Length: 464
Image 1 (cartoon, helix red, strand yellow):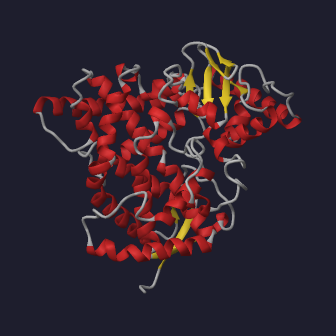
Image 2 (image 1 turned 135 degrees about the horizontal axis):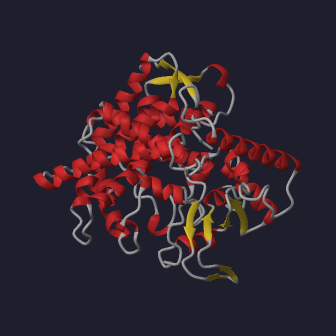
Image 3 (image 1 turned 60 degrees about the vertical axis):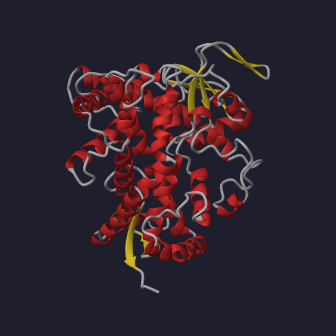
């Protein structure tokens, strides 16, 4: 948890109480808790959960079966793990499970009329128009150029922190689609990226909006970003200027009369999504390509075979995310399966709902644990092994849900695959890379820290 304590007196006392509570929870966890019981009142399973959400949910599934319950900070949550139950909760046909995000999450990203039932399809259509079909084709030259420029910039760095560098690349792509007025190399771009990182960290902090607390710092940052977006909204409304981006598409929605604040909340939500999705998975792709030379060789051969296409057809009209680089796509899918971007999808029952004799009670929080399905040996044999060839055949329905399911399937899924493929192409056709320093030979989970993540050194490959 991020507390950001800096004041004496009452803040020190609060910090001491929290520290003692956490220490007791860790001690209880080490001793082992009785089946179905939380480690401590109030904080429940939060300590074990924060150590590793995916492993925590998989261990609890093995212990308690499906569905099972967890307790986090006083809230009892039902976790469903079967493809059938997850589809039931997330499917289009069921409006009984609206979003179940935490109060912290909602407060940080903002709520407005855009979040009400029945309005979501209009927002989704605006985003999909920009990120699929012709909209995606229009983005390809920028993505390709930025990927090449990003990788080339790594030549000048003796050590490359892939988490930090990929984060910059992915966020610039997302912002180009979302808000084209922001210069990719400007200080504003870094300000927004760092702001989204702060909001992400604050979703796991204590929801105390008082000076000295991390959550308060994040809310101040959010207010600054909202102010800047509102200025842009006012300018675009007043001038009637049209820019080929999602921002303009949202302002052009006729079915809903959004306030400026509604637009700001949607923009922040999309900026947030663009900063924590592919940025979390792409460093793992580079890691697995390094650790599995045979896989890396096959990807390199595939990318070398299309290098000429890149030279001959700069329009990139030939590129299709799901067919242009088939083996590279298998590798990306396997990494996404192993290192899920989303461990679970939160929902909340708005009435009593029966599913095969199990009743979700009105108001109860429900987590659809997609990661549990992706680690189920019934659907993915030897699930902890890295094996891209398992995706030579299409997975069984509702077993590979890394981008969600149903009406809330991530509209940026094709963009995510595309930006990953272009970065891999320019990296693997021009460079080799090695793990660096203390991380060498160790499976490191990337984290957003200047000295953390997956560190590599690059070497220029000879031109064949």
